[in-house]
Length: 104
Image (cartoon, one colour):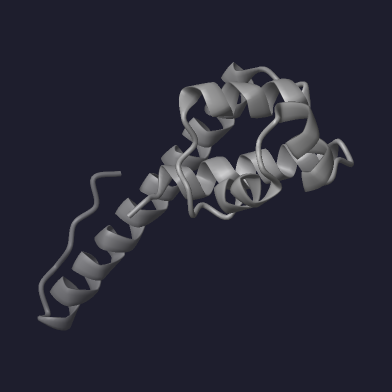
Protein backbone atom coordinates (compact mmCIF):
# COMPACT_ATOMS: atom_id res chain seq x y z
CA UNK A 1 0.00 0.00 0.00
CA UNK A 2 1.27 3.45 -0.91
CA UNK A 3 1.35 5.78 2.09
CA UNK A 4 0.83 9.37 1.02
CA UNK A 5 2.22 10.69 4.30
CA UNK A 6 5.47 8.74 3.86
CA UNK A 7 5.98 10.07 0.34
CA UNK A 8 5.06 13.59 1.44
CA UNK A 9 7.62 13.36 4.22
CA UNK A 10 10.27 12.19 1.77
CA UNK A 11 9.61 15.13 -0.54
CA UNK A 12 9.60 17.66 2.29
CA UNK A 13 12.87 16.27 3.67
CA UNK A 14 14.45 16.39 0.21
CA UNK A 15 13.37 20.03 -0.24
CA UNK A 16 14.74 20.95 3.18
CA UNK A 17 18.11 19.25 2.64
CA UNK A 18 18.44 20.64 -0.90
CA UNK A 19 18.18 24.10 0.63
CA UNK A 20 20.70 23.25 3.35
CA UNK A 21 18.19 23.91 6.12
CA UNK A 22 18.03 22.17 9.47
CA UNK A 23 14.84 21.02 11.13
CA UNK A 24 15.44 23.73 13.73
CA UNK A 25 15.54 26.46 11.06
CA UNK A 26 12.36 25.23 9.36
CA UNK A 27 10.69 24.85 12.75
CA UNK A 28 11.43 28.45 13.69
CA UNK A 29 10.34 29.84 10.32
CA UNK A 30 7.14 27.77 10.10
CA UNK A 31 6.37 28.10 13.83
CA UNK A 32 5.89 24.36 14.11
CA UNK A 33 7.62 22.17 16.68
CA UNK A 34 10.80 20.51 15.52
CA UNK A 35 9.56 17.12 16.72
CA UNK A 36 6.34 17.40 14.77
CA UNK A 37 8.17 18.30 11.56
CA UNK A 38 10.48 15.35 12.12
CA UNK A 39 7.48 13.03 12.48
CA UNK A 40 5.96 14.42 9.28
CA UNK A 41 9.23 13.89 7.41
CA UNK A 42 9.35 10.28 8.66
CA UNK A 43 5.76 9.67 7.56
CA UNK A 44 4.53 9.15 11.11
CA UNK A 45 2.15 12.12 11.25
CA UNK A 46 -0.31 13.64 8.80
CA UNK A 47 0.14 17.30 7.95
CA UNK A 48 -2.96 19.49 7.78
CA UNK A 49 -3.29 21.74 4.76
CA UNK A 50 -2.47 24.78 6.92
CA UNK A 51 0.63 23.14 8.35
CA UNK A 52 1.74 21.98 4.92
CA UNK A 53 1.37 25.52 3.60
CA UNK A 54 3.49 26.84 6.51
CA UNK A 55 6.19 24.27 5.84
CA UNK A 56 6.26 25.05 2.12
CA UNK A 57 6.43 28.76 2.91
CA UNK A 58 9.35 28.16 5.30
CA UNK A 59 11.07 26.08 2.61
CA UNK A 60 10.34 28.74 -0.01
CA UNK A 61 8.78 26.17 -2.32
CA UNK A 62 5.30 26.31 -3.88
CA UNK A 63 2.82 23.90 -2.34
CA UNK A 64 1.85 22.86 -5.87
CA UNK A 65 5.44 21.71 -6.56
CA UNK A 66 5.49 19.56 -3.42
CA UNK A 67 2.10 18.02 -4.21
CA UNK A 68 3.15 17.36 -7.82
CA UNK A 69 6.29 15.54 -6.68
CA UNK A 70 4.29 13.49 -4.19
CA UNK A 71 1.74 12.66 -6.90
CA UNK A 72 4.53 11.50 -9.22
CA UNK A 73 6.00 9.34 -6.44
CA UNK A 74 2.58 7.80 -5.75
CA UNK A 75 2.17 7.00 -9.44
CA UNK A 76 5.58 5.30 -9.56
CA UNK A 77 4.84 3.20 -6.48
CA UNK A 78 1.44 2.20 -7.88
CA UNK A 79 3.03 1.17 -11.18
CA UNK A 80 5.69 -0.85 -9.35
CA UNK A 81 3.00 -2.60 -7.28
CA UNK A 82 1.01 -3.45 -10.42
CA UNK A 83 4.13 -4.82 -12.11
CA UNK A 84 4.91 -6.97 -9.07
CA UNK A 85 1.35 -8.32 -9.07
CA UNK A 86 1.49 -9.07 -12.80
CA UNK A 87 4.81 -10.88 -12.40
CA UNK A 88 3.40 -12.97 -9.54
CA UNK A 89 0.38 -13.97 -11.64
CA UNK A 90 2.60 -14.91 -14.57
CA UNK A 91 4.83 -16.98 -12.31
CA UNK A 92 1.83 -18.86 -10.90
CA UNK A 93 0.43 -19.51 -14.37
CA UNK A 94 3.83 -20.59 -15.70
CA UNK A 95 4.18 -22.94 -12.73
CA UNK A 96 1.02 -24.73 -13.86
CA UNK A 97 2.37 -25.14 -17.38
CA UNK A 98 -0.13 -22.73 -18.94
CA UNK A 99 0.79 -20.46 -21.80
CA UNK A 100 0.71 -16.78 -20.93
CA UNK A 101 0.14 -14.45 -23.86
CA UNK A 102 1.37 -10.94 -24.21
CA UNK A 103 -0.77 -7.95 -25.09
CA UNK A 104 2.25 -6.13 -26.48
